[in-house]
Length: 347
Image (cartoon, rainbow, N blue to C red):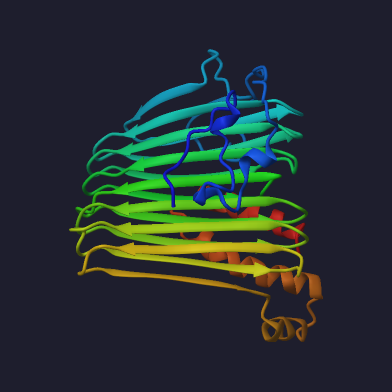
């Protein structure tokens, strides 16, 4: 899988296409206009957003701009809670913005990242980086809720240090093309990594969840689960790659992708990969795509539960494993409610 690209909306030659191996299922250039005019900034949105009930600091980009007019911010955190919001209200045009987050040694940060879109066929590009100093902890929770005609890409680079811990949960609902990509450099040395995600797709929506993890040193751990639901003519893409470099012994890395197809017209493209260049490792990956269990559905319906409700219960239970691994209770409850509402419109 190729290294992440940097998309510049002012230069269509930077738009990845199917010729780029890592974008073969998500042709950004085909989905986006040939020229994208950067749209005017919005007035700062009202504080809150989906995670407004979780107390903490808030930083909101409105059509790609902060209140001071800048499109990029550097953040050094000594811990706490940060709500990072990308709010869009546009029918066309686009924005590009980004943030670089450093978590100080020994500190613990909860990052609540949301993509809140209204309007129509805008194009959005977010570039982020995260650096965890030794012993730092970062839990990143991402909710992506955009219009069906939007085109968006969020690309993040994560650098861990010895003894650090990075946990990520992404909930994607798709758009005309929606891609969330995470590249992690894992040093080993007792650092731990959790990368979880779920996609909930209906209509003609498209979501692409791509991750690349490079274990560069000995003694590192990675756990990764992705669950998804696709119906109607939706298309989901999961690409997960774990690379264990020479000398990265005692690496323990596990990756799974499981999906439900609720329509014979929906499509799921899954590409889990392991590239192992060390001997003393424990690595595994798995992938399943199927329909709801007929026996379980029959059992629930035999208890007097209507078919639609029975399907919703089974689907929520299927996705539930992803939310259950969120460590912050308040954030977990918000994500569970968001997922339940979205599934209610799909099943």
